[in-house]
Amino acid sequence: MHPCGIDFGTSNSAIALGDPAGARLLKVEGDSDTLPSAIFYAAHTPLPAFGRAAQKLFFEGEEGRFMRSLKRILGTSLMNQGTVVNGRMRSFDEIIGNFIGHIKSTAEKQLNHELTHAVMGRPVHFIDGDKDGDARAESELQRIAAAAGFKHIAFQFEPVAAAFAHEIKVTDEKRALVADIGGGTSDFTVIKVSQKYINRADRSQDILGHSGVRIGGNDFDKSLSLSSFMPAFGYRSTYGEKRFDVPLSPFHDMSEWSKVNFLYTPKVKKDMRDILSESHAAKRFGRFVNALEHELGHRILSSVEAAKIDLTDQESTTAALGFIENGFTLDVQREVFNTAITSHVDRISESITECLATAGLSDDDIEIIILTGGPTETPLLKQAVCSRFPNAALSEENKLSSVALGLGYDSQRKFGN
Ligand SMILES: Nc1ncnc2c1ncn2[C@@H]1O[C@H](COP(=O)(O)OP(=O)(O)OP(=O)(O)O)[C@@H](O)[C@H]1O
Ligand SMILES: [Mg+2]
Image (cartoon, rainbow, N blue to C red; front, side, top):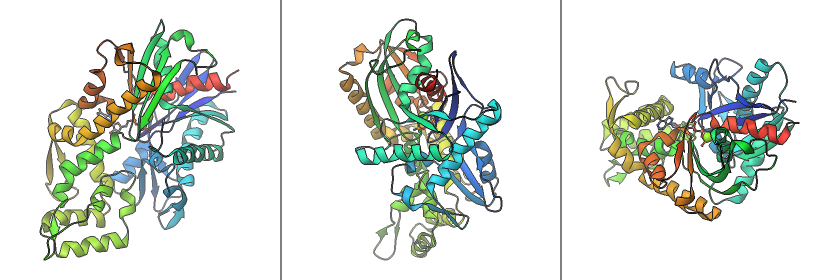
């Protein structure tokens, strides 16, 4: 039997094979061991495209429906509603199932055998402060994985999995804080790590505490969109004789990966056109209406995300938005971005405090910080996390794949013989 670990991430996914000798990542798209969690249903092709191939088709202007951040739908009421894709109603079970089934079959083709046993990663909380919603999200993911053909499915917290991937380099036992900050959630665990424990069947004694909050890179995108992009699209402008404020929620949805598609309804488009006819900022608000009419929300968000990533190494950047209007560019400053995400970073820090409290430890007790997940590159966030633990060593390799690798180790522990 060949057990595997699957990290179905909000932004990126990966799969690793468990093996008595360790664990190894499998290729999921060409030579890459990560797959963007994106799916594209072309209007006139029966089978969907996934990952970079999906992004490419969408950005080349192929007609069809593009989706990202599907993990954020788990546990929410949208799971029961489904969505119309190219004129046909599809459930999110089917859509997420297509994605997970694609990962499974891509791995199986390489291995030449079926995969039946999987450890799936899960955030500490899919949804904050809602135990029922959280349990629902896990059982939905279980149901989807079973429908995709996995016969034995277990779950592991994503930050615990990251610890399993990193501890291979740790010779003596150390108390580690794992900060796994992803596209959708920030998850923490305090755990005793050591390469000597890799084959320990039961690790529950080693896990000292955990916490999590539904904030991640998607929320940073939203903050940057609202602070630096949407004002140029008429956000917070006024209309009509009585100088009403334009409604805020369409701008919020336009800034949120998992909600953009739901804006493209005839009603929203008509309401916005009506407002445009009385707008006091017709040029700016006209861009918003244009983006709605031509369904450009994902393209704007991709520009926002690219600008955010530029600001990891640069103080400022220029976003090119020629697809909205000839020659349209926006200057984006790291200082403005930092201010926009401050409340998120504070909330993430509080979650670390909660994690240490559940473990009964203080900052000084932490000997290693394991950083994983794309947003841990963000300077303000990295500084906020690392400055708390001046005595701790830092372990931060393979930020987009360490969770899957650790799930691979865990699959061997849970299902290997
Ligand atoms: N260099 C960078 N600087 C800042 N953010 C980055 C960088 N690289 C990637 N990101 C962000 O990291 C996020 C994706 O990270 P990751 O792949 O770890 O998430 P995920 O595992 O898919 O999500 P989750 O674990 O929450 O389900 C995206 O929001 C992306 O914009
Ligand atoms: Mg992740």
